[in-house]
Length: 113
Length: 110
Image (cartoon, rainbow over all chains, first blue to last red; front, side):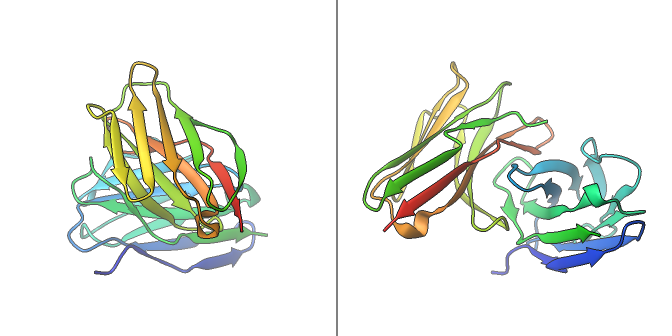
C-alpha cells in the first residue's frame, strides 16, 4: 500500500516568509509525528498527534512553529517568519497506534535564504 | 536533545565483511528501533526490538539489546555496496516519540 508522503519535496524561501509543509500518513494510522533533521545529525522530535489532537508538542522550538491535523489524517506543519536556522529536512512519520513502528516519509528539504 | 549515541560515527569496510554498529542510551525504554537513511532523506525502518527481548534477526541483520547496560548493537553480515547508508538507533519516550542518536555512516566498498 501507499507509504507516508510529504509535499513539497523541496522548498526554498526567503527569511521572514511563511511556509506550510504537508504530510499524508499511511491510511488508518492514528499517530503522526513531525521531526526535523539538520545536516549530520539524527532527527529531532517536534510534535506528535494522536488523532486530531497534539499529544506532545514539547519539541516545537518556539511559537513560530505550529502544526495541525484537523481531520485526524493529513497534517500541516506551519512556520511563520522563517529564519535561516530553520533550514533542515522536515520528516513526517506515522504509526498505527503510537507505540509501535514508525514509518517515515521522504521528507521536505527546507532552505531559508 | 538526543539520547542515543552511536559508535562508531563512521565505518568503512569491504564488501563481504560484517559491519557492527553500537548504540547507547540513557533512560528506560519500551523498545528500540534501528533505521537506515540514504542521502539524508527518508528513513527506512529495519528492525524493532522490545525491552524484554535480547536478540532479534531479520535477514542479514542481527540486533542485540542489553537493558542493564543500556546498549544495543546492529550487525550486518556479508555486507554489500548497497548497504552504504547512515544507520540510526532510536529509543521511544513514554509519549511514543522517538529519540535518535547521531548515526553511524557506513561505507561498503566493492
